[in-house]
Image (cartoon, helix red, strand yellow):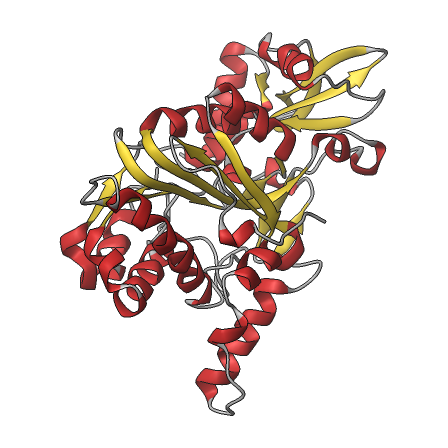
Length: 371
């Protein structure tokens, strides 16, 4: 049985389900979920590109920022820096970070212990293969964040793939989009909210949704922030993801919301309802809500900037040369992709929070801004 009949059966038994429940099943069903049924979904042969798919440059730069954090832990008696990657997929980012740390920051590398967290059981085998050179300091196969982390928790394009509730303002009343059945097909219908947390969300942010505007509410992303904060004893949370502030997301400019399906690098506006589990589903992260969740969890904001400014502040240019070898040209092309306006450079945001750490801005955020 595929996923669509399972969802239809659930709808017939229980009535329409909140879109967030549908998205959870489509992406993370243990057998048929888009992410849980494969070790990797990005890259040329996948459905979308990430900053990891262009090569090791992003991992090298992230390693440089993490290495700068280690002395403050070492100076207070810590002998280990615990790096946790949430939503680690096949482990390529962790591999790139570890490769660069071993080569460029040997003292930091000696301190590193890495845990990879991903809900795909299939990914664990790929993680072991990709990180075999660092096997002695890497733990793979976890599906939940560990506790007692002293170091950093990194989430690269995770929050945009967490289930969202979809809401719309109709005649001055907040309604929630549910997935229902119409003639053996799945469709969306507006019904009363499934949880009071949706109304609280708008109250917490002191916002209201304009009439007729549909939007996504990322309660799961806010819950993840709270969970990451609880997992962290001392250190940093770094998030890299697509996002906008709430006033932009909840405006006529995005009247239909930002939810999008992707398959074979092509935007899929509605067909994802016909084949749940076959397409990526993603919605822009609400940066305002993420900051509010971090504040509620006792985290300190340390910076938020476009990816362009993050990678340039950490020395991207110094990693490139003018050579005409294939390797040199590929690195320059990769760098261009990382900073491209309108692409990864401006749409991808870098965000950092701290817990029981020094409060000054990190180098990566020293001269950055949001666009």
